Image (cartoon, rainbow, N blue to C red; front, side):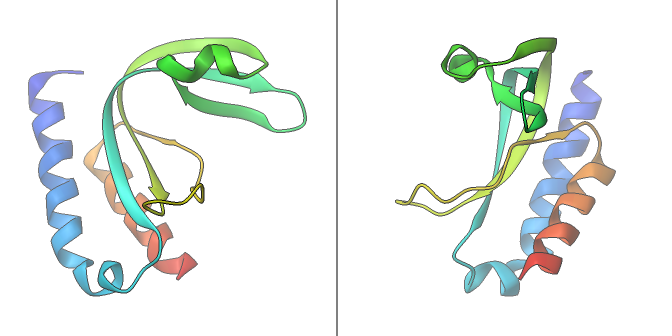
Length: 105
C-alpha cells in the first residue's frame, strides 16, 4: 500500500467519523481502525476470518494469506462485544464500513 493510499484511507476515515458523529455519539459500539500485519485464516465452521498477526496463533485454522494494511471493526470499550475485523483497502471500503454501521443501528 502506497503512502498516497494510506493517506487517502486515513482522510476518508476522519471524514466519516465527522459525518456519522451523530450516530456514533449514542452508539454502544464504536469504530476502530488499525494499520498493521494480519492474516486471513480459514476457520472450520466460520469460513475466512481476518485476525491481527499478534493473535493469529491463538486461533485454529489454516492461514490463507498474510497482508499488511488497514483493518477495522466495531467494539464496545470496556466490554468483550465486538464485530469481526474487516479489511479496509480503499476509501470506498471506509464508506461501506460506516454505511454498514448505520444499517446495524
